[in-house]
Image 1 (cartoon, rainbow, N blue to C red):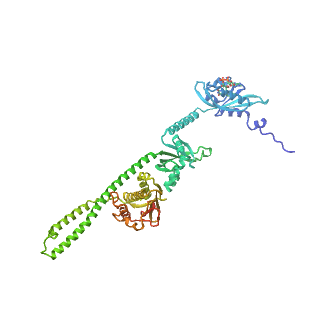
Image 2: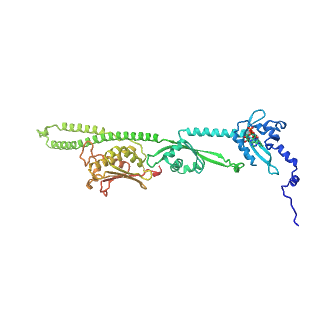
Length: 522
Ligand code: FAD
């Protein structure tokens, strides 16, 4: 025969373990406000905590309906739901606005549980409540602050976005939403990728150490519109994990706050200003160059006849000294007068030579030929458009750095582009093309300027670099010094310039300049 065990929850057994009065003591001393009502919510019992919260003594509240606590602002629907629920013998929980004996209000978190008798009918209700006024006040305060912060962030004129460590957007403002419209999804990810590309390892280090980054300018290329420029700042802040797991062992989460300010317009203005000052600088250089060419031309033109005159005077002098008594004709001119005239002419020529203005002295600096060529194309856009020339511009895939003089190099390439435009204009019909290719090699930078003009005949390929040589006949515009100047600039930069003999569909000028010390890392 097996040993019989009584069911653990039988009243007899329960009483053995927990005496009846213990239940009453436990309820009486509980920190939670507890009341027991009949089936119509008339209070039969209220514990000490209930009396503390409501201000009613036990004798004052017993016999009254729970509705005595109602402040009469809780919507009727709440009570209807409460009763519908408990009458189905299900517990109800909700918030009710109650008033104490002294008339002061409090927010009660109330749980009502039906007590079902043996007949299956609800005989009583057990009410439990907590004063949650302070919790509610704090929640509202947090909510209000959140709303305030969101309104301020939304009204800000810069795009603001909050990302988690995996760069997922958690919060953004109106300006940021506008950026989504302009740049597509997700602007923050594109900007962070641009920063990463621009800063390399420094970005990773700053990110790993959650270091803030002040205003950094990045450029984002867009498919159809001009590139956009943004000034961005990254700030990190940490939050303690609010999960239960982290209650005793705090976990920290890091968030990235990215502020993005569109500075495209500012950049455009700066760029226009830069191009205008470059234009002014080159115009000044051109003026000086023109003066140099004119005076050098005059000196060159005068030097020939003067040399001939000197030679003739020398001959005459020698003849006179061999025939000391000869008289009459040209030989009658005193040799001293002729010598004086020649001397005066030489002095005048020297004055002219001294009047030739010097080249502007410029400091040597690392110069990216990609940028110089792009600027030259911007400066000549008007002429290129006017001539209907199709331009193909292939920049080097990395900075094409040479050590040089900015104005001289800009002038050099401007000269080559101007020559190309003139050459294309000379040709009637056919292709009208200009192609500029810049390539960075291991130790030098190579630039090709190709045009679809008539080209330069084989026999003239070296002559065109000589001063005063022109294929166009020396006119005011064409003294034939352009390519000579180009050669002078290239030589002074330690490079070479030549005309590609293998190019037969126009003219291809090749310029090679040594790579700046430190190469592409400058
Ligand atoms: P009432 O006329 O009392 O009731 C409003 C609506 O509630 C009615 O239209 C009806 O749909 C429903 N209702 C009321 N009594 C009954 C009933 N006996 N049977 C079926 N439906 C009914 N209220 C508070 O404001 N604060 C409390 O802290 C609170 N604690 C409670 C604790 C317990 C254990 C119980 C059972 C009820 C409690 N109530 C409490 C509800 C309270 O009894 C009232 O229903 C409520 O206060 C509304 O009172 P009233 O006089 O405005 O309207």
